[in-house]
Image (tube, helix red, strand yellow):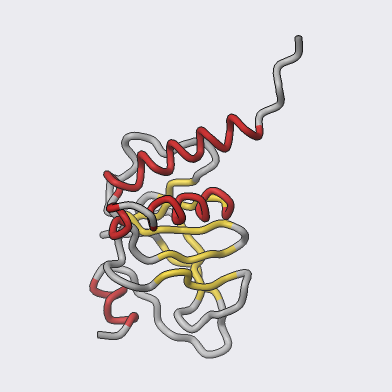
Length: 142
């Protein structure tokens, strides 16, 4: 099964267009997207890779210093942590072409299922975002 077939079976139509590196898609109807800043996403992926929840992550793309994962519809409740962007059905997302390989916009992972499993991913993203916030917040003045 090709990547294009897998994507289209999940409601994500990503036709190949020669010379075009990026495409703007309308989210849905069977998927939504979580965008994370690259440093957060790298820590999340490293933590998940070392755990039994490694299979919770589906396809991952990067564009404009943010990593995106695909989620089932209505995965926005509970809310995702500050610094992330949840895109619901009808919103727009820019994704790389399936053949894109540059550092700015590319596919990080296209193994396994397209959709990530939010019940396993959400707690890890929330925990790491809180840890990052704690270490990057200015110290209170005395």
